[in-house]
Image (cartoon, rainbow, N blue to C red; front, side, top):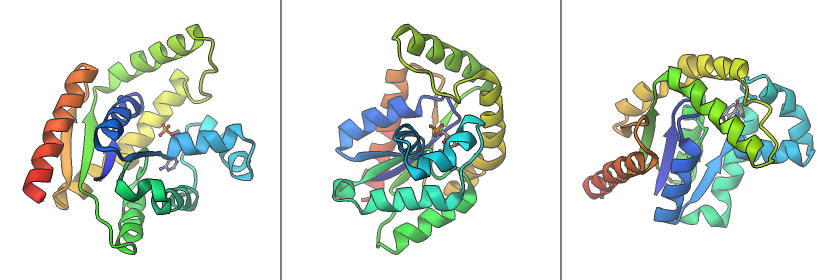
Length: 199
Ligand code: AMP
């Protein structure tokens, strides 16, 4: 199973991705997580992208495409993967298509989580509080003003993915405003219909 999951920041992509991964025995590929690991490790790549991420801007395409290509080629991804945070633009979606075509692979489905934007700020603020309460470090980009910037980027650059994948017959839209379990059940239902129809 090869999937893309997209939705605005704070839509619950990480949580849903974890559940899908467990169910289908596939690997999660989150460009945000991979980039944060590189930043934390002080790797050259991390130094290059640290400030960009902290400002809530997008890192260059070639950086994320290379990260994804490497992970897709790894043996762990043989059974499939779920991309979370990539592609984020139509240009990245086209690059992903080319990357997969070159490996004779195809996406099975693309799940869009729809969330009311005003709720997102509340969710992020809650995430910051919970993270602090656990004594963990808060992500540099978990901040209301940075979030607004990220939502603006999302609206302008990522929302066009809906049309892109709808035209390809891959898009499944799920209401992300429901409980985590309900969202999971709807994704599950949509995917099982897709797999039985698509074979
Ligand atoms: P995320 O965890 O997906 O919200 O990503 C956190 C940050 O990493 C983003 O705000 C961007 O700065 C960067 N990033 C993650 N994925 C991408 C991508 N596909 N293209 C460009 N930048 C990305």
